[in-house]
Length: 129
Image 1 (tube, one colour):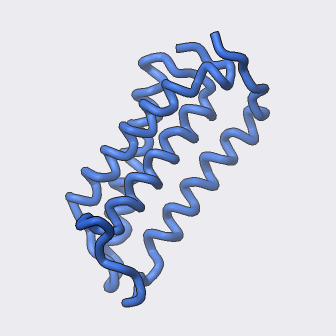
Image 2: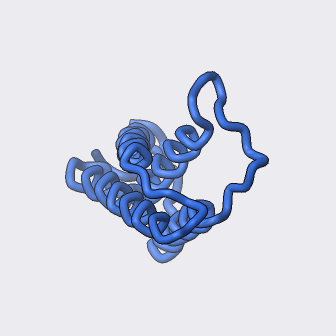
Image 3: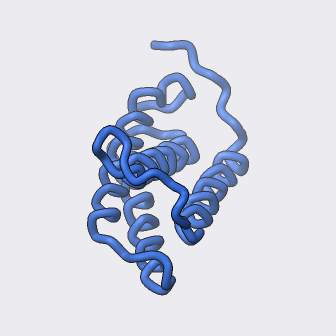
């Protein structure tokens, strides 16, 4: 078993989840303007951003729970997917943004990746699988 790092206090772990949610929401409602590149290696830049954001969010939820069993992984991924769907719904009310089923699917993929990565590193933080 790997050496574990001391976990942050529970309240701080949940503040981290809220901070991730706030950053994602803020970035999702900003007017993107015209200055951002459209693609990177043939893939839309927003795809990378969605995957990173929701993988990080799922990892933050897993860390807040300090568990990596099947239930915790499903909660981490599920909360992330539902939050992503909610953000897409919010975007539907903004004239300069669009609601996208593709983005919601990418969010779900990122959440799944984040939950899997949390499962891999959870023992380092003293969480049991």
